[in-house]
Length: 219
Image (tube, rainbow, N blue to C red; front, side):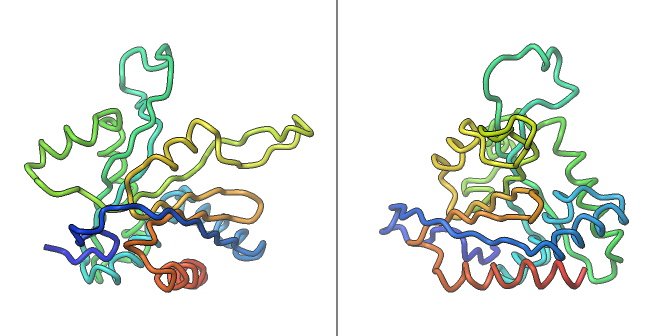
């Protein structure tokens, strides 16, 4: 089994102590991230997932990692999806394999291919996926949310900013994951880290906050 530092392996401490932290990329690094993604023909979401997989692999000492990604739950192939009312937001597993022989382009393309395989099934409940996988343990301990939807500011309807929609915020607050990384692609890229302080130390969070911009610089 893979060592997962974000999983709760203490059966006697199942309580949550939710804390928030925030990482804000400076304007130069934000611009660099957007340019790099465009040059490689990737979405910023894919770029971020790839960088996070590298960081996470160091923590769990494995080149084969799985974490959750929050989706709209509305795959284009789902019949009458455009007529469905209500929130279909879902969290599904994304598996990424790191291979030292891959070029960066190959690595990120592999992540896009993995997501393409996940996308048609994004409406399937996590319990159903877990049963199909035949596992009795959780598929992942944490999740990434990439907020793609600009919401108008109250003061000026023409001025758009990426903020947490109340509907999605309910998902963030109520989830049972020990770590959620909420990525907001604003003029300066922002990452909100919601974590269970009974499982993840502040030292680990600060280490993550240093690793993310450093690796983004190096890509």
